[in-house]
Image (cartoon, rainbow, N blue to C red; front, top):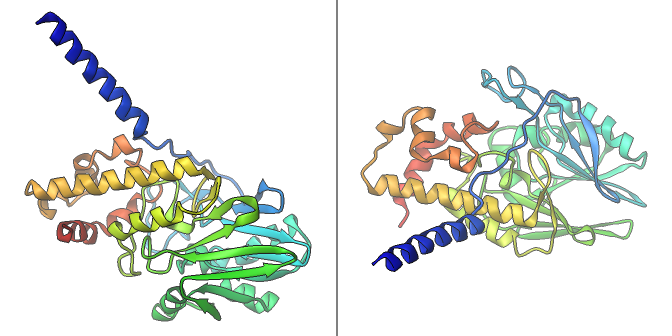
Length: 318
């Protein structure tokens, strides 16, 4: 009997260790401090423009009253070629001039193309400035243009594609992939194949994921889109917001998201209603978001704004 108990206890411990090794639950989210906009080298010929990092009181997100956290607008990528620059996203319209001043610090070569990862203002409302200042073409997935037009946002892309496109400049190829719905219905992964690097836009962020339901997002299809993105050959991911990640860290992020969806489904199956998840404190406790590292990240207010739709989507799933 004693041997059986000890063996069972050892098995339980080993199983727990195995699960921990397979599923690194808690994301170690970067804690931002106030900082100016600045370029950061990722690899030779590839930079990101991060910042400004600031309290989200006014001008960080329309309608946001502040959450005590430090925020920054979407990360911009700059690919340098011998014939000019390819820029991915351009932040808020009010930040666009500063963005391209930082681009000049990376290289004095002209900007030839701007590519959009999705339509949100903190990533792409600098488009109009880029077009008016540099006369560049704005390239994006067709749903991104449709979203610009739907919300009457200036700077809509003038060149669109369906599932895939390529840009060639100065001997460099940049690929644009649309893998399906995720954060929005137009999320585009920008691939720099020669550098084994991608820009994920807001498909991956260093924070709790956000599903923009009015913009065509889907928590369930989100996972399929990440799976398709993971078929690309990359070792470095530039995120929509935050530090860069390795491919394994992107896989881990996907596992956390799947676990959050599973927990939501389990709550609903147990009869938990939206009335019992009316506040953020209730939602994060019920979903045990602290275990995922997502209990107090910069995107929680935006995530929770779509929580009723998230509940409904998971409830309707089989």
